[in-house]
Length: 449
Image 1 (tube, rainbow, N blue to C red):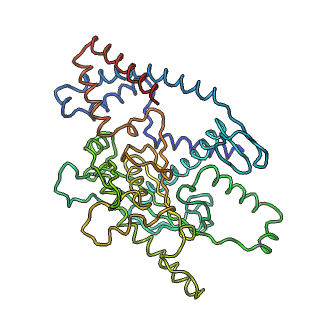
Image 2 (tube, rainbow, N blue to C red):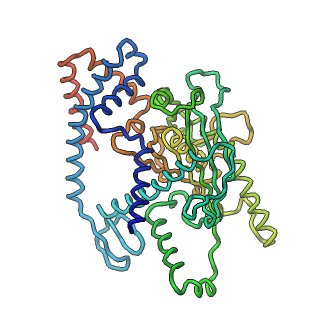
Image 3 (cartoon, rainbow, N blue to C red):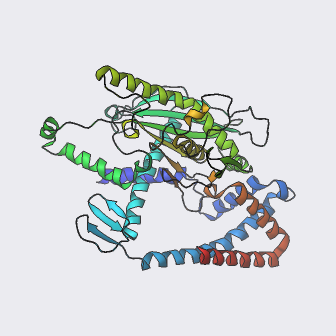
């Protein structure tokens, strides 16, 4: 138990580290404000020095913290006034407000949210482990197995690296503002023994319980007899696409580089030809997502074709690739941190068919939109806003506390520039008016939600 506790503590510490943790010590907090001030010192704020901008940011943070405490109290009251319960699946329950089923139980209210939180934390810890693996494996180096028995690439997992490369931004666009400076390190692992869910059903508390049940069955004395009398179900397999990013020109991954990438006006994208529905996306990250799919898509497609040939050789009545059901094909799971998480979220939406591929001269580019419908998912750590106008359940974003990156988009950055400048120019009176306007905005939002 002590070993398990140590492992969980180390994994949790790693997750916090990956989610842009800002130190809480007084001196470190001042350094954080100075770093943010240096990152946003552009356009309207270019006439002010870093110390002036940093002081204004501290004032805004103080008023925002007070409003956050008010909002947090209201949320806690909501949690405590909404009942929760757990009943057996076979029991009669007249209450129609049932949130869902977990294992053999029906749960609702806070219990359902707590269960979902446990599953999300487990998924996030695995994503943090994968991100750490990506950082430890140099580009274009094939390392298929760990020397340890408990590693991500341990022999018993049968996982293997099928793609390892660095993708650089597409410079074909003539619009200098939309050109990305993000270089993407990509590591693709194939896991043939995976037999869990895919798409919306990938991960979560249900997968966690199913894996626990499998381990319990393996440890039971009757496992051998069961395996000899019952046919084993076919294993669908899984591709794990691990992304990490850095500045293509300096190999850095710091806040100024992230802010400059996000401080670009979004573009509108038509979702499909049959309707006029539109979505807003971050153009540099959207283009990079298309480049990512064109790179790793060939690996995934080739594997599907190999499986088809193998099936046809063993069974003359096997269906072809276009007739295979999503449940028979490998799951695709994308993980990434920060900007690479946003690229992964956009790529997942393209592969599921929610977004079209970015415009390309390649005639085969359109085939990738919807290529992995109902079997692709993404988990993003500290992911910034990268699209709006689409609601999906197969992309999960994990945010740590007051991390600024998941709250940074072109619109929010413009708002931050304006509030900072007003705070600098307005002095004490301007800060007081800003506090009152923030309070009024929060009240109106609460009444309309």
